[in-house]
Amino acid sequence: MIRLTGIPASEGIGLGKVLIYDTEKVDIESYKVSNLPAEAEMLKLEEGIVKTKAQIITIREKVAKEMGESKAEIFDAHLELLEDDDLLDEIKEKITTDDYTAAYAVNE
Image (cartoon, rainbow, N blue to C red; front, side, top):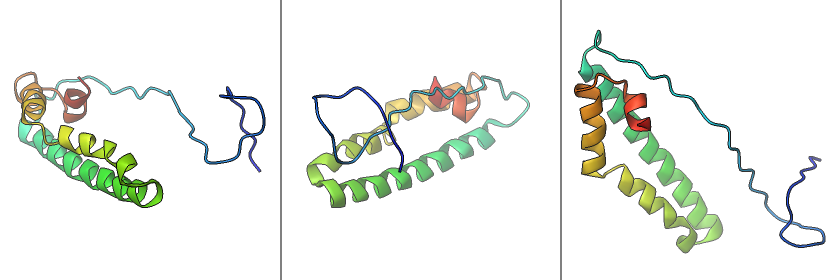
């Protein structure tokens, strides 16, 4: 059995699912890719978007099944971000104009 400690919302014993919120920051290295064609980074961006959409859809379906449709609707906003033309244009400009990697351009 794993014992977790934290800040309780109220006194007593709590039973139920636990959410572990990890605040560890992931550092994304900033570097230029002027020696590589921007097309390679654009392909990485597109592949990343496709994989991320699939992951979000899977999570959304699981949440809808286990917690209800209203709880799962938050993931619709995540999917909309991945289809936001203004956001994607800004990311693509950082790749093509500023020569950033796809990962760094998204992070910016």
